[in-house]
Length: 289
Image (cartoon, rainbow, N blue to C red; front, side):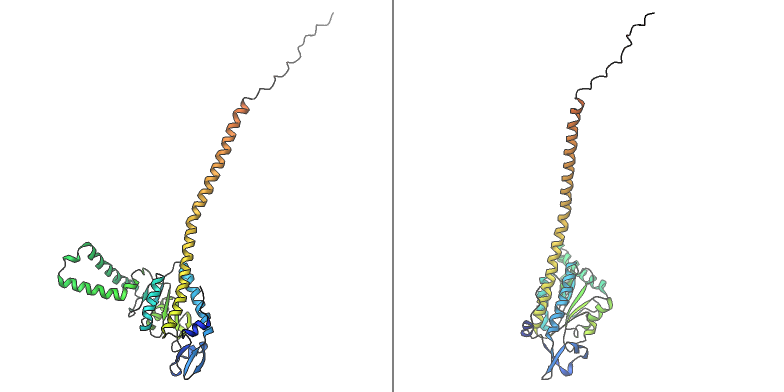
């Protein structure tokens, strides 16, 4: 993963904040200066914070965790959808469904409803319905697909949220805070960074700025996913190596046993030891009287 340089951040317009009268005082540590009534963000701090956030997300991806991307503003929707799909992560680019995190089981029911409609279409049940019922079900399916299609594979609560513009997505941030889910976010000078665990101070209105940050983050996630694949491959290969070692040891034991068995008959056929000499016979003649 390569963190964007100062010049790249500058070229993308990440340093432009909001007008001074719209600022949030909590963003003061990340503001470099004011020019023509507009706050300028300190890009050195942006660079450091972006690297920190990318490392956190890479670690989560390496451990097989899911990260939910959220951006409903016009200039960020398409960019975020493309980047999230590239790493296989769920995302929300339409209106945030209230209670999506705090009332997750209900959202899952709606997703299952969408799956049941698809099943009806495949098994032929849909064809047996009246024209009116078909129209109603088709409209319902389209609505569910628009709002929940991108999170259809989210079977459990995400391990982290990545948010573009926390002021606009304040409901999503509040739900994540309530459940203790870490929030990584692009925070502009008009937003409150206190509710965000990993702040990336940058311009959240310019498409180039959003694109650059999302590219860096998704590259880090992709690295984590690749590392996970390598670890799984190593774990799969480990039992095979153990089995090979065990087989080799057993073969060695068999050879040693065979050698001992081959040597045993030789010892049995060796010439027997000479019998002991008979005791001296008492052949002496009796003494003459």
